[in-house]
Structures are given as C-alpha cells and as structure tokens.
Image (cartoon, rainbow, N blue to C red):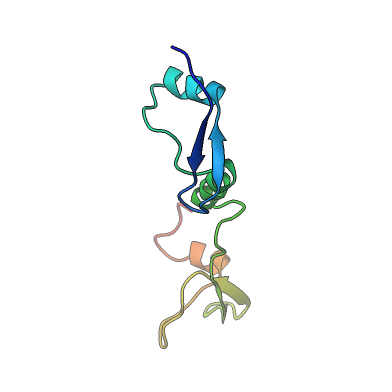
Length: 100
C-alpha cells in the first residue's frame, strides 16, 4: 500500500499539520484505523495532562494544621468545619491504616 503525506487540521488549536506517509504506515502497522485529530504539540499536551505531567493542570491544595500533631500540612480537599484533618504522617498512623 502506498502512502502520501496529508494535511490535517487540529481539533484543539485549529492549526494545520502534516500526517506523513511514514506516520500513516506506522498507524497501519499497528492496526490503527483513525487519523490523528490533534497536531503533535496538542497531542503532547493532552498526553501530559492525562499522565499528570507537563501541561497538566496543577492540583489545588489547602493549608491546614494537623489535628493530631499541630504541624502545618497541605491537603487536596477543602476541609470541613468540625472535622479533623491530619498530616500524611499522622493519617498513616490512624487505626486501620497500618498497611500504608
């Protein structure tokens, strides 16, 4: 089968990019039927955000004081008034958390 370069439009940024004959041959060898819908840059960004890497949105954290030891800690959730919040060390020592 003979492949020729194709010009495609990225669904994310709208820029045109080339889907080379070599890339098409690779896709065919792996049994991939669909053409890429993102340019290489947008593919890299999307891949990084799925893996939590570069381009990934940063995770929001809240600064709290540990209810057990009183040390400052950061947690990935907004604390609820009246509920204890623990640093990672104290949390791992809670009953039922011995496996961590």
